[in-house]
Length: 111
Image 1 (cartoon, helix red, strand yellow):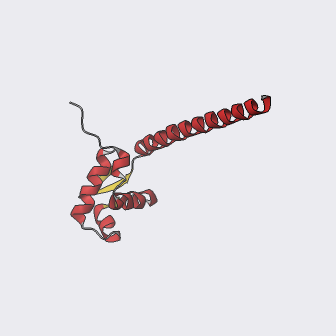
Image 2 (cartoon, one colour):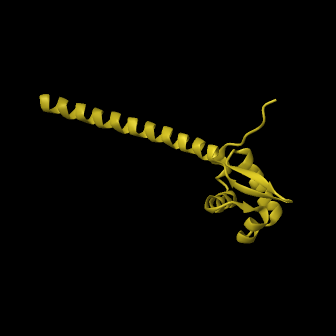
Image 3 (spheres, helix red, strand yellow):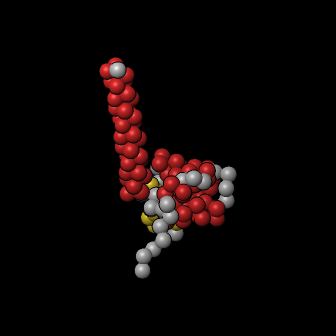
């Protein structure tokens, strides 16, 4: 049975999740450490981490009774691939527009 995986872009659309993600980009943190650094409760931090985990953006390891969360590099690679695809499309569109403009200029000079 396939598992549900949230869209990473949607997951990062929430300011609290984005702040958690940015803290984790600095270094791994436990839920308690994140809650101390943010203006939200521990249960809220846990809920946001669950969404980020479902989106493939964070992973955790158990250390005794606590979980230490870190950035999941495969999730970052997925975001990067999306950005690369968007960038390639934008550059292709720019090239086509520039070439069309050159063709229009050539047509005007030939007249």
